[in-house]
Amino acid sequence: MALLESTAVVPAQTTAAPTQPAPVPAPAPTWRDTATVVLQPGEGIELKLSMTEGETAIFEWTANGSVLNHDTHGDGNGQSISYVKGRGVAGETGTLTAAFTGNHGWFWRNRTSDPVTLDLKLGGSYDRFIRP
Image 1 (cartoon, rainbow, N blue to C red):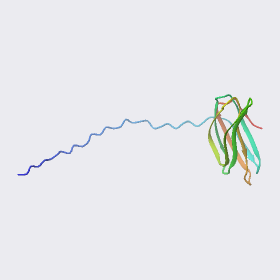
Image 2: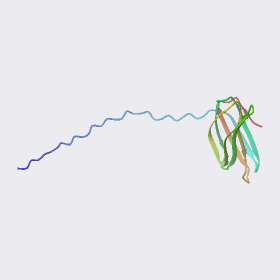
Image 3: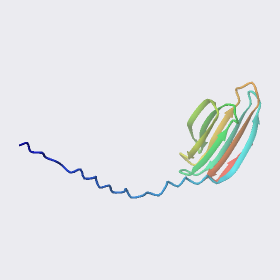
Image 4: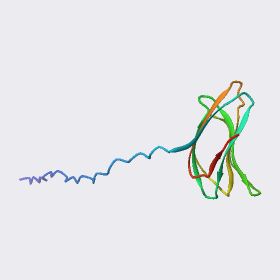
C-alpha cells in the first residue's frame, strides 16, 4: 500500500504596506524680478545681482526657441569667480549662491544670425537686481 502525503496549500497572508501620502510637488518659485531683452546678432548683455556671501538666488532663463552663449560669474571687493560658461544654450534653471559679497550674474551673447529674445526670472535671496 502506498502512502499518499498531501500538503495543504495555505494562501500566504498579505500585509498591506502602510500607505504613504503622494509626494507634494514643490511650490513654484516666487519671482521678484524679471527682464526681457532682444539681442541682435553679435550683441551681448550683462545682468547681475548684488549679493551678500552665502545668499542664494533662484533663476530661470530662456532664449525662447533659440540659443545663447553665456558666462555666469561674480566680482567684487577685488575678487572674481567664473561659475559656469555655455555655448549654444537654449536656457537654464537653477540656483546661484554667492561665493563672496559682490555682484553675481550673467553675460549673454547672441552668436546666431537672427535676433534672440532672452527672458530672465529671478527669485530667492539677493539684495538688488542690476541691469543696464
